[in-house]
Image (cartoon, rainbow over all chains, first blue to last red; front, side, top):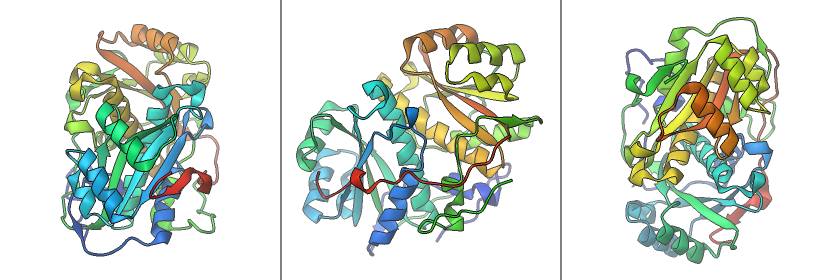
Length: 182
Length: 182
């Protein structure tokens, strides 16, 4: 399913896991095993977190009606209704370093990226669907998943067997790079 | 330098890049080439970002006095003074999706995690040093690097040849996982 890294200057098989990860929005039939879900969560929880507080929490969603409800709450994430698996990555502000949302967001985002890369390495397709900071999405996800008051849904990840292929790439832009100071 | 993944249930060579990445805080002598820096930045900019706005910006720091000034500003990041290379990952609020800091933080954190994993894959050692949301650190980094008003320093990454080895691991915690709802 996966194609070779065809980029000139970044063609390095060791780094295929990074450049080959793309947002996959259509899914082929087929389930994702419990063992695979555990692997994805192990990868997510291998990310660094501020003061090693690990404020991340995960809701693994397989119920069709729950995936459909999440899809209804996320205008750009309707495809999660057609995925066999969704993982909602949340953060508990009470558990975060200094109880700061700013740390929680960084920690959860590192975990999401690890999870996406792991999915790709396991030949799955996945897509990061934004929840926070949109208040309506946060409110709806909290309702759908019965989240406690201190738990913030940061992102939903749609996961399944890839139903589309995309070339490896980077959006590297030299204008975004400065040396020693701005 | 790198050891084999010794974890029982996650021992999968394909995923070594995730579980083998650890925070490396001491550095052996030796420089990091310009080509490698470009590779790290390509990996960072291969991360997904909200609405593909790519609000990330990077300051590549090699000057000893600048690294020392950053070290002075980061109480837990003094080791960056002994690293041959620092990359300060910033976000431009003006460039972020909906000009929202909440999106900027997620985008920059995904980029940081990609950069850390790439460093590990290239047999370098790296450590994520928190800047945002601590106001004093943000202010000092903005001064040191002459950042424009709309640019927020999110994290500094110390990078060099690893001066210590650590075992692969995950901090997987089943208590953090819920099924279908909380």
